Structures are given as C-alpha cells and as structure tokens.
Length: 208
Image 1 (cartoon, helix red, strand yellow):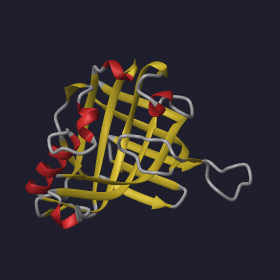
Image 2 (cartoon, one colour; image 1 turned 90 degrees about the horizontal axis):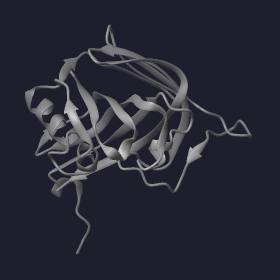
Image 3 (cartoon, helix red, strand yellow; image 1 turned 180 degrees about the horizontal axis):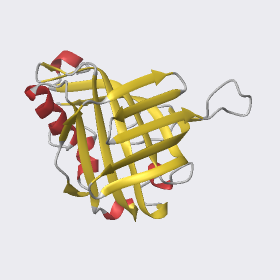
Image 4 (cartoon, one colour; image 1 turned 135 degrees about the vertical axis):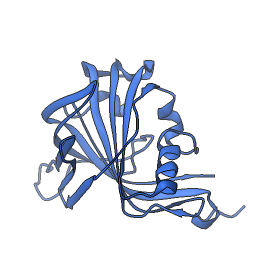
C-alpha cells in the first residue's frame, strides 16, 4: 500500500513547538510521564506556530497557539488543568479546527495527552505575537502571557545541545535543549519562572 499523501489526510499541520516549565533542565516528565517532575506541580506551556496545514480543506497557515498546563508531579496520574489560547486572526472554521486537534477530538498525537486532562478552562481568542530569532524563540500576549527560550550551546560552543532518538508524543526530532523565562496569570493558572526547562522542535502532525 502506498504512503498516504498530505492531500489524502483529513488534516495535517507542520510548524514549530516550544515549551517552558518550572522543572530543572531537563524536565523528567518530558522524558517520561512515569518520572517525577522537579516540583509538586509541573506548570508551564506549549507554544505552537503553524507554518502550514489544513483541516478538512480549511487552511491553518501562519497561526499561533498557546496551551497552558498545570499537572501533578507524576504526570501519568492525570488530573491536568489546561487552557487554550488561539490566535484571534483565526476565523471561526480555523478556531474550531485547532480546538478539535489540540483537545484530541480529531485523532493524531493530542489524543494521548487529552486523556490526562481533567479540567479545561475556557478557550480564549487573543492577539498572539511570535518571533523566531534562531536560537531565541518568543511568544506573547500583552497583559496575559510572555515567554522567551534560548537554546543551550554544546561543549564546543558551535552547536546546540540536542535530544535525538527519543520519542515524544508531540515533539519532533531532534529536540533542542534550551533555558526559558515565562510569566503568565490567567485565573487559577499563574506562574513566573526563569532559567528553567525549555526546548523546541519542528513537528509534523496528521490525522485520518
């Protein structure tokens, strides 16, 4: 059987995902949800920039998304709280598509993560700004959220430190290790951290 092409899939997206949480570098929970995170609660975010994509014919190019989370120290036990921010530039069809994908309703990698979520806060549609300056990535929403991550140089100082050949449900390979600084306050989800676990990768997700 020939490989399914992008046009034959019901949805597919490609782009950049980066994260920062309050764990020490590297977050044990990132490696496996069966490992204990650094603190009693693991709080942080996934920031997503879609380069290209479509959902049942709806284009999703050049949109930004933020997922805030608060999880137990042992992430696999569930009980996660999540909040979803979607780029206000997205039209109604795009908003519905993104929400279906990132809450696991449309198949693909987020189905697994959605099983751990007990509480979802109301989705917000906000002016999400994004900058990619090579080693530095930033995403922010005025008055709500601001994150910056900087990749960590290796011993020879010429290359970034990478995680290669390790499976992660939503990240691609390689994953570039970084240090992050994030602050946000939105109801029960609030954090201010600096110099903690961060990384980024380029992803490719799809669902049939």
